Length: 143
Image 1 (cartoon, rainbow, N blue to C red):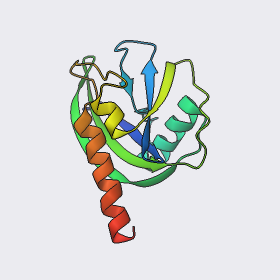
Image 2: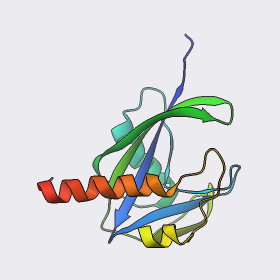
Image 3: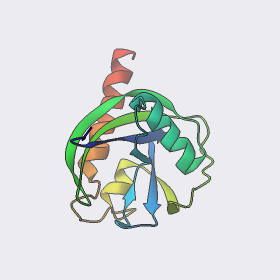
Image 4: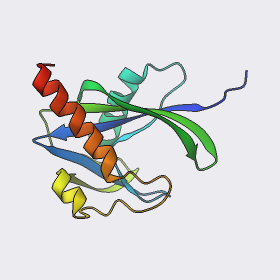
């Protein structure tokens, strides 16, 4: 059986109006939300929580999907489901996949803290703004 793409899931972990970002140890060495590729036959709703737990030690809770995107990452076609997550615990225990972490507000990200980079696989301010919009829309609707 051949596959057309890999499935990934990213978690915009939002606690007290700040997003968790991780600095990758392997190329591309970018700051990004926790997440990664799903295991074969893994439900992405479960997989994103697994990825967050493995990469940060945090038990997260899924709030809502933010976006689905399709693109090329290092020569591999990937479809990613990006989620808004929250957690009560903010104590991060990094896996060896990451060298640093930070909690950043939208204002921090706008100010370049951290510098998201400018590669084709870098996350951008508008990704975090979209996640915050989903949060505010849910908050207003009582979701």
